[in-house]
Length: 366
Image (cartoon, rainbow, N blue to C red; front, side):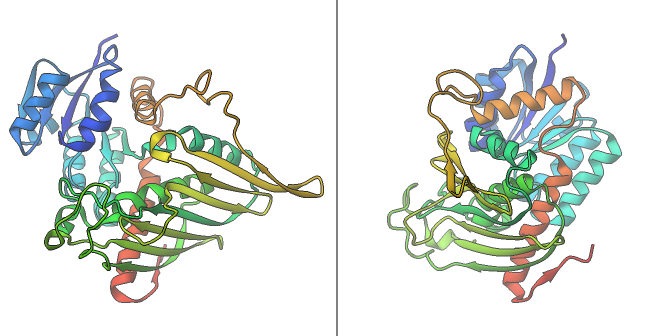
């Protein structure tokens, strides 16, 4: 089999912590032949560690988007550039994985979706939390109808003091926002996916910047209050067209002692589900609840074995995400994360920001 030729645009933190290690394990199916970053030394370092012999190193993404020998591009840049680079890459004839969030607003996300449809190329968004064992178990239960009609959900993305102090995270002009668009996007993606409900009717949102001058105790070290431009917390009440309600909470810093990140609480008319544990350490688990045999019951997972293997062994979420993406390309299948789903996440996040700014409910006309 001829190996797929990959180009990477953006060689920073998410590339090195997630994408490069996962793709390196699939060297029998792909090779990375091009690296782009605004800091040339960073691209060169990545090429030396992960690249094929003679890999291209550049600071201009167009060199990769228009390269005739590249099949697939991963867009791993700040949020504000996602749409521009993704559209150019799709129009250059490449399949594209773009990191979350899809874009900083609905208009730019729609341009990405339209480009994918126009070119016939595959587009997916980096929502790797779908590939956790607890996420897959929750999705299976929802699809089997075990929860019944899910009419209320909470999307949790709360850190007590976990403001990222590297890169451009606090820079609103490059990221489009703070914890809502950064980690709230994961929780909302999971929630909509579990519910299989992508038709929002209206949104009421609030954002706060209450703790920017109080960096003490931050898990990533103190931040600079002078460069902290985004919200530190955000909350949204989302009413769906079928009457279901979702409460989304997102915070990098919030004075509470029980944080939950990239986790969901689901309430259906037959049962419920709530996610616990350290989700990002692949140690999260889901507890299902219902009434049966004349009493209330909770079902917790056994520690005897994992979803993907024996003795609790599981496939790390970044590896599972990469494997299914490559499989979708090679076998011409739809990726698990579809752009038609991701665009709704972006649309809702944008509405929360707009509602917070105007103090009004945002109603979707279609």
